[in-house]
Image 1: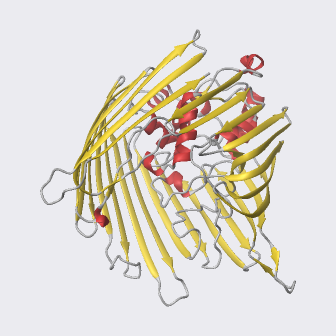
Image 2 (image 1 turned 90 degrees about the vertical axis):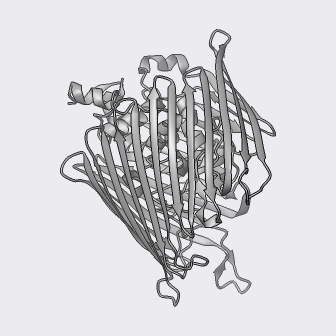
Length: 568
């Protein structure tokens, strides 16, 4: 049981800094929101606007949300049968598979209202319509039974679901995301080039196929997919012509997983575009891949892995590791190894790091994390990779990541982040140089008022520098952010990346290069209509980038955007 002091520290007080970007970064288990891609950011923003009713949806919808692993979904189902509804994040933290830290990270995305309201909302229509110049999308729902998403420039699908307590099913026609195991065989929609938290060492999302609702085309498979949950078994079947914007030979596949009290096991396979050669003796221009994966939790120690086999090229790839608590809940260790043969190549994969497109790489990542109770957190991660194993030209790389987060008091937070990358001369254009980045963020929040200060320096060929100050007001009805950015980077190799706030569904991480200033403003206004049945949200964003310094003259760049969003 949690003590009163622990509950107070967990769900209030010390971790007082909270805004949409911070909440998304914590839920996605990344160090910075700019590590989350556009499609994932849209999904998290949609859940912030309309939190998932955790007590009133079945396992298919829990999986669709992308917030839980299959093991956690099974634990939630068992808990609801034994103990009834989960009425708070404090109670969620006591369910098997959920730590106090994870429960807190998920709290903004969940609705804990009881099941007694389920019958009233079973056929309740809801949805949203979003418009911005030359782009629009809509998403409609009829209770927990039917969903329709459409965007001329993004995802388009129709999804039907149903079933009872023992058997649940979902059928999707159109664009969907397929994610299985540790991403070694099939995982589309999100990939990162590195790990900045211990959570990033393993893919812990639920395995299966779920509808895609993104602005961005090409982040999901397009075809038909079905999912069936029966007890602790989950089965998926799917067919697609490749990514939505890059259709190709037909891809068909299936996945089967079994959850246990302490983890899950899964099998996945697919084949794509298998054709006979003119002489009829060989297969060409196709793929046939199979994989087996597992995730196991024993007394807080997590073990995970996946092995994939390319049946046509006779190649086998592996990824696996562990996460262990050390000396109490405040300290953890993570270790992950990977082996991706040069001939393996999985175009739909997104396993750990995946900087090599899951081919021609052998690597080892090691991470350590320590945190005093809700005040101080220290993370150290090292990732070594070798490419060209067995060839004449080998490429070696070592990446080091260190981060210190310090909650000075409920209003002030300090974050220090250092990244170093060392490469040998075999990497084209690097000439053996490394790249180092040192970043400092000072964040302040009191009620809806917020202020951030960032100092960022990058050293590669020379030194690139970026600094900004950002002031904001963010509450349930209003949102206003102003940012002033100064940057100085004479060489492209010394460019500095910085995430910029945008309206929901927008995503921008520009590279700042040259010597200049940038001013940006983002405003939002939400109002209720028709006795609060409709919510109209208006957003506007404007920016201007100047290059006033002598010796570096470029044209001023301006940008203005508007977005209208209607939710019911």
